[in-house]
Image 1 (spheres, one colour):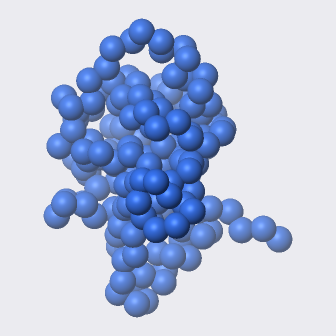
Image 2 (image 1 turned 90 degrees about the horizontal axis):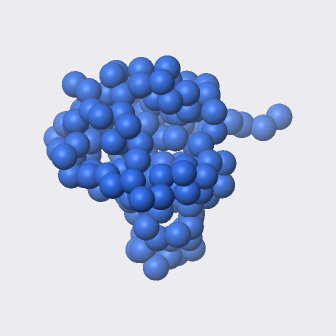
Image 3 (image 1 turned 135 degrees about the horizontal axis):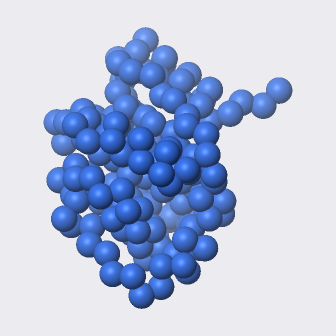
Length: 162
């Protein structure tokens, strides 16, 4: 019997509560220490929003975009946040693609409160141990198709970042 990612994340959250520790995590594939040259793929696009805007983002991702995502309670820069991990059909391996894909989604969502640089493959997040993780079912995002469809579209992440 296999373990799905939600079970693994819940087990980690339970362990954190029991041990009062919060290790950092990422959805990157690594071949060595946490340095850009050791990163060789990203299996989920990460968008982290402050709690004030997160539920609106969840509603848009689920009901308008129709994509699958995990909602993970996090704590970043002295702020409670929610991280949206959008699973990808194929890993992102090209350097500029995570930022481009994030900018397309963030622009479509149109909500402020995005944690600066959270979409980068080297971004590590810290889960909060006081809340549950949940999965919203939907379509698995094809990063290459999404980027190809948006050729020539100009976006601006900075206006949404905090």
